[in-house]
Image (tube, rainbow over all chains, first blue to last red):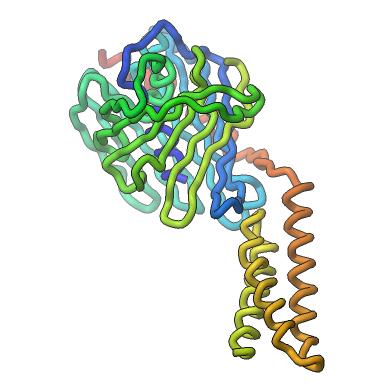
Length: 253
Length: 107
């Protein structure tokens, strides 16, 4: 599941190297995806991924809460129950993160992470099941983001001027370190986008120096080729077969 | 040769049954398909008095196929409403709000 999530975020993140247009992410948006495993056309549905946005206010500031939940379908719960939460609290204007949190429960394995962003410094706190809490402080680049906020930031980018094969290099923070990511524009394709119907999409290939992603141009994301840039489909390669996240519902966009 | 086919047909039929019970959706057709292939081969290579086993395996494979198809077509996948998870989400959000205030206090 971590792989699915990582690829999902990474693919969209890689697209984000271009100039930002005026498009902003709205509060109240909800995207629901179905996560499946495929082998030679045969498939099984594993989990539901829900991405939502809402405004959270403190006494001083207002933040956009970017939330991503992953939950296995009830049929799998008896065998391998997954309940993951990934969330980022960002500046609504520029999507710069202030706080990133990750809480995973995958078949009994639990882990909690918290990243506090202060300028170019990140203080991370990590707590795994049956292990003591660890803390780490490291420096990041000025444009480095967490995977969740990057995913949304990608959607504010303008891909209309991209040429087929054009690549972009980016940095994200994941597993308490910076990871370089590359995004390649593969052209446009018309695919099904859940309740939005068939949509023309930007097809992007993602690559990263991590074990979570394998294969060349086998980790792909399709973003609707309109102002919203809704992720309609995500495919990733694993040694036996492929996995994919398919958009089933998009509301509040 | 027939013995090998018997073994393979039985193994894949058992796997087909297991995959049908597990929430594997259409992935279950993989062992079921292989079981069908070996069972039909076995049926072809069997004398009249030896056809009882392949016919039984064929019956099991057919039942498994119908079961898997029925599950895939008529049962919708749903995420269970998990009260513990819902509570965790609320707590995490409240906790984050406090942490954001702490961060603001440091600035």
